[in-house]
Length: 438
Ligand SMILES: [Zn+2]
Image 1 (cartoon, rainbow, N blue to C red):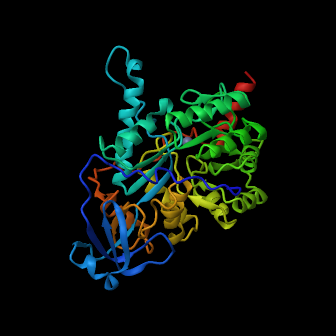
Image 2: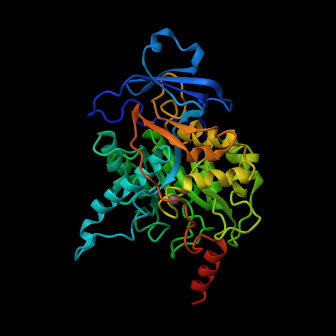
Image 3: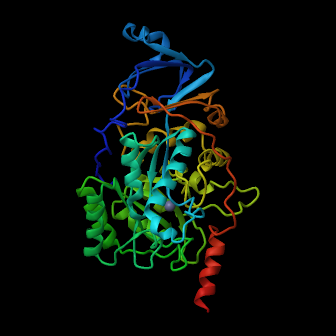
């Protein structure tokens, strides 16, 4: 992070301040994974009160003052911090469904805000208690964050970017905030601050899903990226980029960005070419990278979908869990993605740390959630069995607690692969070449 330490998001604001206080209670299970280390505590217990963890450790050492509290013993189960999705676009997935009225565009903002409630609730139902929105038109993610916080709708803790900053006709320009010079970029950063965004998200390269860009081309100069990152940090926000192309990744890292989405090392010829020196630089600077490196759609048989994530991990990069949920895939992609990381060779303890404490740090919630220790907010899940032995335990969610309160889970449709192969580098490259030769 180039020496910069950003202020924790919403550190002083509790969720659901309008609701009665969450009851004090003790949760016990055969295993406790606190998120502070790769080990589990056998026969663990967590005491929570007023929305915070007040004690955690081996149940046998539970202090007498908590012994009389309401206690739930889950037996052969594991207590762990709530999971963190670092890369979602909550309003995007239901775009196919529109209000059945003569002019649906009249209701665009309200419709997108309401639509995003659904995927936010689905994520929380899967144990994802904190979600970073990496781009939403009209700041609908900021409004939803506030609605959840105020208790208007139940949902996960949101960290909201508002509209992603891009160029005129740049990647994601339809729902994004266009800026074509340093003064315009600074103005956008300050608009985001004014509107209550938690971070600034910048489209540092083109993307696979916009006709006017190529994923391997950098969209901003180093000077432009430096201006954005510095001003975001000055205002207490972290700064994230979308970056497929290697040159865009390099500029973002050198400009001091805190978070890279995709990081897929797409070279100037449109093909993926991992750059070990750049990976080392990302690791040295402590930049977080999400696990959504573009896989081939459909996945190449015999080739792990998360091979690039494994290479980054091997270079010591701070990998976190992010799937572009909403933009390209459904809420259930979260669990699917964790299994793909395990298949690629990441240890389960590493995956769970990436999904909890490190994910929380990556979205500005360091010291707030992601660890089950005193002083952290009580965002936790209980799963049957032992997820360190087998991630499938995460499919057996017994309870989700957000801010000390039980979240009322709903049934989430199972994961299905994204339709078509719009995300394939080869397809994007061919489409680009076709347009050039028209
Ligand atoms: Zn995205």
